[in-house]
Image (cartoon, rainbow, N blue to C red; front, top):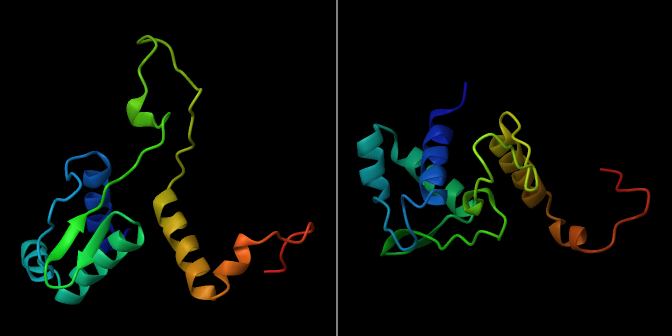
Length: 131
């Protein structure tokens, strides 16, 4: 079962990506979110931190938390037109794996905490890295 805060993170992420929360929208304060969702203030802060780490929102001290502009590349699924109702167009097929968002979030968090993230920007040994 998914942690409650992750469910809320995914709800916000989905609303932002679908355009229900457009760029520039001010999100509720941490206290208001905690009150609305019956969660602790620390959990509300964690939710906004996750969204910020995902690049979906930005916090401005003294002003609040705002939805960032999300740029979608051409060919992303939301700008595709159906060819015909009975045709499945696989030109832009993307796999949908169970818990894909959680796995990516975890992998990125591990990379960020290793401390050598800059080394990943350079050429790697032809046989791969040891760890």
